[in-house]
Length: 564
Picture 1 (cartoon, rainbow, N blue to C red):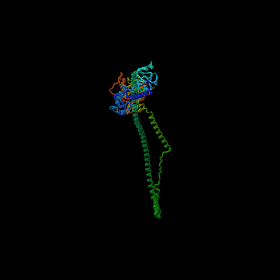
Picture 2 (spheres, helix red, strand yellow):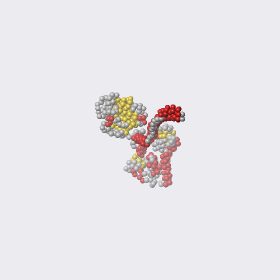
Picture 3 (cartoon, rainbow, N blue to C red):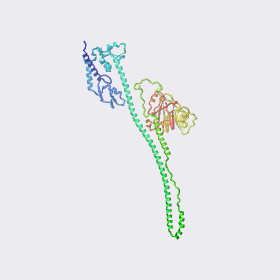
Picture 4 (cartoon, rainbow, N blue to C red):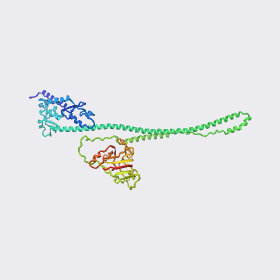
């Protein structure tokens, strides 16, 4: 008997409502109807067992988070059963198991269904997003449950749909569900690992921002201190010049005061003689004649001589002022350019993060057999042809120490002449290598590496890239350029053991602390030992102009190559 369009529409609506309700009752972790549902403070619900498994995988020390909204909890929340949701699930399960459950596969076929066994859009598995839901709804065209999955067309099929997909690749519905759930779980895991990488990257960037702020604050203090010292020097020079001017003025003023006193005395004596002469002029002839000769003699002997006097002018001429201004301007400009140039050339990394590879979120289970991808333990000996005459070598060529008296080594074109240095006999141009040394002494030592370069000029040069202990602090040097890092600044005592790692392909030379008492060996544990590199102190980006030779500078110090 035919079914009216209204009845068919009502049945389809009821089917859709049931599917929507079932979708709302599905756990977002297992994609199945809730089993013992529990609620979080953020409002999301999950199966208790599913949430426990998710949080077991999250137990990494960074707290717990909601699988849906990623709301974070510092402590694992106490899970409370959602009684209302549990009752709804039980009623829904009971309605499905009743004698007349509401099922979409009870709908008869209609002329509006698609040919070839594809279900109508209301019941298509691509619409509800779950093969298990599609299996429960069934084929709307034939009114039968799904039994197979066509991999070629990516659709679910009932028994009557199989003929239209003859020759296609088929899968049992349960197998298809299990396979795709496995894929989904893998992708969820990959994405969660990628999220952890993003989270750690964000944390690193925040730390880098703080490091940047602190570093630039120190730089501003350095620049301000430098210019304050220059201003203090200029002020001190200014005060010195002003003091010399005042001292010269006091001397000249003292001379002038003495001359003024002398001149005043002569003037007073002259006034007295003139007064006597005028008084004598008024006397009678007899008295006048008796006194005139004495008065004339005194007038003739009067000291009225005036010595010449000159006060020199002290003034900066225009040429001097102009030249001094140009010199000061040139000095300030040169200082500014030097500071800017030094800041621009500084390549030391304040804080560095290696970006993860594009496949880092996936598990790489393939073995790495290429020796070029592994750190190789370097078996080193010291080169007796390069050792300075103030360094003595052990018989096994694995230890060098300072000697007060120059040793009578034979002349050799590669022997260091100016600096108490020694190189190893082994050099490297390819691969990744590491070696460990023990150092000690009362004054200064350097551990590093160098390229000999063409000619013999290198025998009078310092080792190219070194880590130096000068008795007070640990610093990195590339030639005459000095570098530092937070790890180096944190060192308060001279390290006893160092591990040096050379990557010829990347062009890096890095220095690490090494644990005392842990010997190296050249067995299969070599790679594991190399990876336990201790604290990274500094990394140079080097340019290989030939083989790279390990080298050492020893002043009242010693070095020993540890057995590999």
